[in-house]
Amino acid sequence: MSTLTPNTRLYSLDALRGFDMLWIIGGERVVSYLAKATNLGFMQTLAVQFEHVEWEGFRCYDLIMPLFLFMVGMAIPFSMNKRIASGESHRKILLHAIKRSAILFLLGGMCQCNFLTLDPSKMFFMHDTLQSIAVGYFISLLIYIKASPKWQVGITVSLVFAFWVILYLVPVPGHVAGICTPDVNTSRYFEHWLLGHFDDAPSHYTWVLSSLGFVATVMTGVFASRIIISNTFKLSFLKFQNQMTSKAFMIALVGAIMVVLGSIINLKYPIVKHIWNPTFVIFSSGLCFLLIATFYYLIDVKGLKRWSFWLRVIGMNSIFVYMATHFVDFESLVQRVIFGLEQFTLAYYPFIKSVAALGLIYIILYWMYKKGTFIKV
Image (spheres, rainbow, N blue to C red):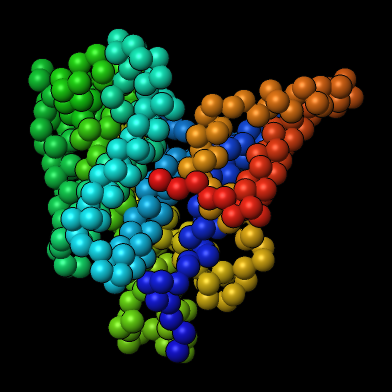
């Protein structure tokens, strides 16, 4: 009976990470520019899915950040079980986690919190995906190594419930409880009270209380990996001969249930990604389960690895390419080479330029892959 051990590399996780990263490093612009150039109705509809919602609701582009946190959670059981099996103490593991989280928080601050200005009056405390990963990863790791599986589930559910209570039962001063608008919600009020001018005032995103949701999202990834690496996994109603197929089906089933549950809750408490409210946690985590179930089944269960190679090239250097695209304008670089095409391609030129920029990024990542250079934190 086929199964995976904690020491087995999960190729599907690398591929899914690359798929997620693809849209950040230029895939979204490719779709957007093509929609503008063609002016076709279905392309315009597709392009809308690569824009964040203004407040309530959900679009495909809103899944990028929770999928990253989910995959961070998936990596925890694989890495921690391996390190514990090698004899590392909890103290050493925690010290490494503190160091890793601090570096991720600093890198995120460099990307979108103006840390590099060295001017406190222009800095924000927290406003980047890497910083949410830093918080979610560290707390989730603590939960993983200190709590039993049942307690892990209980703590995760408690975090989501606690955030729901705070958002909808604790009123903002001067308002009744339950208000959740861009300008008036408990999470935003608390963040501004706590951080003052270091609050992320120019946007409606919140981060401090939203960290309850970040941790919950990371923990859902932990649970997905627990299903994959379990050697005792067995449910009587799953009749598949291959245990790995049963696991893929179970992960998909959990995802479907969470998506349906999130959709139902959305009728009363709408999805709001900006504050990472409980409805968003449940709905987006369900979609993450469905995605990893699909990738896991195709790549690790069925062994169809070739088609995903290019995604794994991107996914195995995700931190490097994330930072690189924040500090280097790759479209401006390729512009210096292909600018002569603009007179011939007209409306399609931005699309061609975005494809060329994405190609340049991929060439760099492929070169790093072939050299065995993987930037990790």
